[in-house]
Every structure is written in C-alpha cells, then in structure tokens.
Length: 336
Image 1 (cartoon, rainbow, N blue to C red):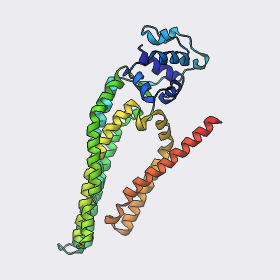
Image 2 (tube, rainbow, N blue to C red):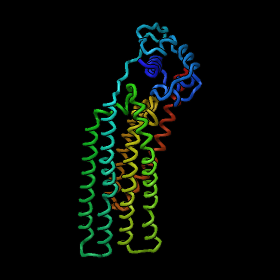
Image 3 (cartoon, one colour):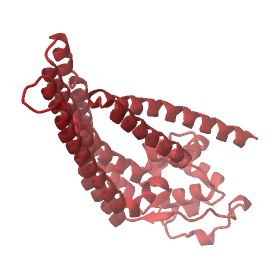
Image 4 (cartoon, rainbow, N blue to C red):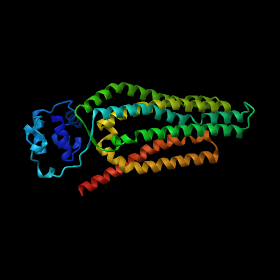
C-alpha cells in the first residue's frame, strides 16, 4: 500500500475529514487532497506529524511493503469505522459516461417544460386579436393539449433517466474512497473540461438575461396582444436554450465533483443533504400544486410561469437558511 492510500486509510480510521486533518497539520485541505490522490508527496515534517497523529511509525508510512496489520494502533482507533465502498476506474468511467449522456436527456426535458406554454400563449393571443377565425376556447384547448403533451414527455424522460441512474446514486449520497490513481485521472478530466464549463455557463446566463428583451420591446412599443404573445413565446424559447446549456455543463461538472467529493459532494454536504431532502421534496410539491392551481383557476398561463423563477430563487435562499440552522445545531451538540 502506497503512502497516499495509508494517509487516506488512517484519516478515515480516526474519523477525520480532509479539512480536519489539514487543520491539525497546519496545511490546506487541497494539500491533503493532493496527498491522498498521489498528486503530491508531503514533506518530512508533515510525515513526522502524521506519524504522531496516527500513532504509527514513519517506516509504516514510507515503506509500501509494510501493511496495516503489522502495526499496533492507539486505543482510540481500535474500533474502526465501517469500511467505505471502493471506487475503481471502471466504476468512475461508467458513472462519468452515464452523467454525460444523462445531461443531454435532463437538459432537453427541462427545455421542454420551459417551452411547453409557448403554443398556448401564441394561439390564445392570436384568437383574441382575431388573427385567424378560431374561438379563444378552441385555441386554449389546442394549447393545453400541446402543453400537457410536452410536460408528459419531459416527465417520461426524467423518470426513465432517474431509474437508469438509481444504481449509482450512492456516489452522490454516501461517502466512498477511490482506488489508487482514480482521483488523479478524474481531476485531469475535470481540469480539461473547465473551459467548456465556463463558456457554457457564461453563454447560458447571457441568454437568460437577453431573453427578456423581446418582451421589453413589445411592451414599450405598445404592440397588439398578438405581438406581445409572440414576444413572450420568444422569451420562453431563448430561456429554454439558455437553461439547456446550464444544465448540460452543470451536470458534467458535478459528476467530476462527485467522484472527487468536492463542492456540494463533500462528506459534510452529503450529511446536510440527507437532512434537507424532505424539505426539498415538500417545497417543490407545494410549488407545483400552487402553479397548477393558479394556472387552471385563472387560465393565465402567460403570467403564471413566473412561479418557477421566483420559486427557484426562494428555494436557494430557504435552503441556505435551513443549512445554517442545521450547522448551528450540530455545532451546539458537538460542544455539549
């Protein structure tokens, strides 16, 4: 067993996170992460410190041929934690491929949901302005059928993707350890993907901002309802493209973070996520219920879509508050 694996094993036996070990050694968490992924080697002073912290000899840390069973550990490490799942290079590649292909499915399904009201909005406004001789009720029926068909197709894609990836959801929800060399290769792939992620995110955000321009112009020019409806449809279409880009690059980026257990997928974040899953489920179910109730009650589909961006921003704020409360509670219990 090489030094990188020994540092990882001893840290986990003591129940420390990378950040906790880094604090005890007086280094950054990134330094510990590089040691454990064999991306760098600690200097002699750090090895001596780890020898004392782990209650093992420096020979054990430095000599690959020395195994753990030959070492007598401190009493505090006699009861080891439950062994973590090992992630091989094959597992990692399978997970990355699944996420890369799944990002297209989820992105397209999301765009379908966003663009689903376009036909309804355009048909209703055209009927109101008598652009073609179709009653408003008939236009509403056609528009609603198209909307529900698009949403149903999107839900089908969401469900099938979710079921296909369910056997790998433990990567995002549970802690694990990677075999030697896996973290280094994944990090190289992440670094090479970084320019694509930055470019995709920038273009997606810009499109979301520019999407409101047609509506602003139509409102300023005091155009007919038909023209304003077209501007709203164009807004949703551009927004769907922007969100599609954000979802695609975001899912691929998060797949690398998942395997490296960084960002939103650290040990601490996974524990918080388990506690906030119930809140997230209840919140989005209520949001959907409010959206559908308001939309069918008023039949103002060209207005009710505003529920989703508002709900998204509000969710981020509320989730931050919930995490802060949970963190304060856990710190209080720790000191008690």
